[in-house]
Amino acid sequence: MAHREAGGGGSPFGGSDSTEIGPIVVPASELARRVRELGAEITEDYRDRAPLLVSVLKGAFVFASDLSRAIRLPVEMDFMAISSYGMATKSSGVVRIVKDLDQDLTGRHVLVVEDIVDSGLTLSYLRRSLLARNPASLEVCALLVKDGQQRIPLDLRYVGFHVPADFVVGYGLDVQERYRNLPDLRVFLGEGS
Ligand code: IMP
Image 1 (cartoon, rainbow, N blue to C red):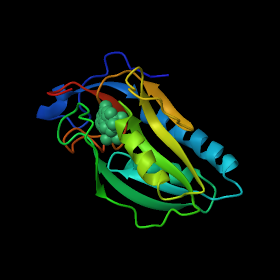
Image 2: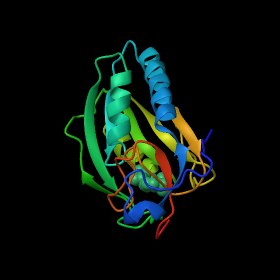
Image 3: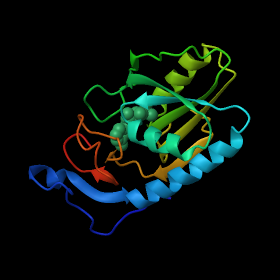
Image 4: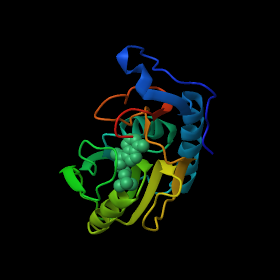
């Protein structure tokens, strides 16, 4: 389901970084369309039990913002920051909570909003940590899943797109804190990809 644009290289912002930014993987219009679909599905599934959206910072901030507005229910939102990579682009398997949730999850219908699942280590750690807090239910909505990269079986209730195993940036995803504000999801071609 990945979308590629032939020859679509170059940074929309130009400058010396333009050679780092490769073709579009999912254009902004497709992201918007799929987010609307996911929002409608979640609205239907949770119509009797408005969920608490737990967004994983920083990468999921754009997705969570758009997704929350596509859900026609009185959702609540909370944020958690997890670090799994440090400054590198390959998974180290080392995960730590940088910022914890403000809300008590006991008895809540929790829907985790994740940006991208690569090895699955981050999500697996997160699930264990959140399940220990006794939610009434716990599901995951991941915008992107990298094909063939998962080292552990994952239970993902909602998935936006399956993408190739390239390192991608844009729509909230970064490399060393850059390119989160690119409207399209693009391949990163620079150092460490
Ligand atoms: P995992 O633990 O290997 O599944 O990695 C998941 C986390 O690594 C995501 O939440 C992202 O923060 C980061 N990540 C993995 N792949 C990418 C990518 O292609 N671009 C940007 N961040 C990524």
